[in-house]
Image (cartoon, rainbow, N blue to C red; front, top):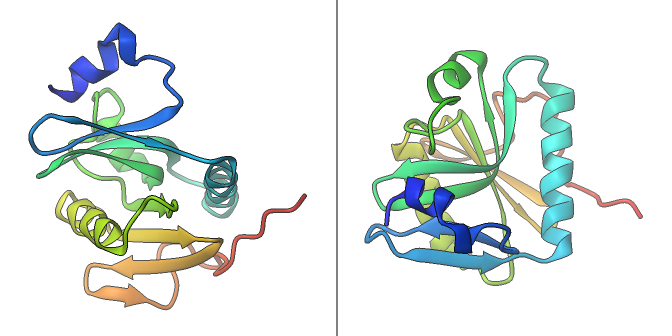
Length: 159
């Protein structure tokens, strides 16, 4: 199955799951909990607040060498948005790709996604685990984002 088919298939619309494709075109579905969505929303809000140019992309489909992966949140510069805005899946990854760690995710899975996003053109990949942010550049873990000065190391969900 190709990503375009997934997007157009009537039985796959409005599912309460995140859908991705593996390298064989098989559908992978992941259910998310409310806390996952809360972190996702807060990260997107912070990106919009701290960066005055470019666009945030929630649930961003990215074509990789191992199928279509969906970053929980991404940010793309205006130049990159021009390249990808009419695509079904991003042929080049947005500059920032963010994954919110779920209880079903393994460390190996997150490492694989980082590798795939970088291979597809990401500049930074971020991981949020229980609100704690980890930032990665092509060379490995970094202290903080070089693209978003002042992005917090801890995301707190206020109630």
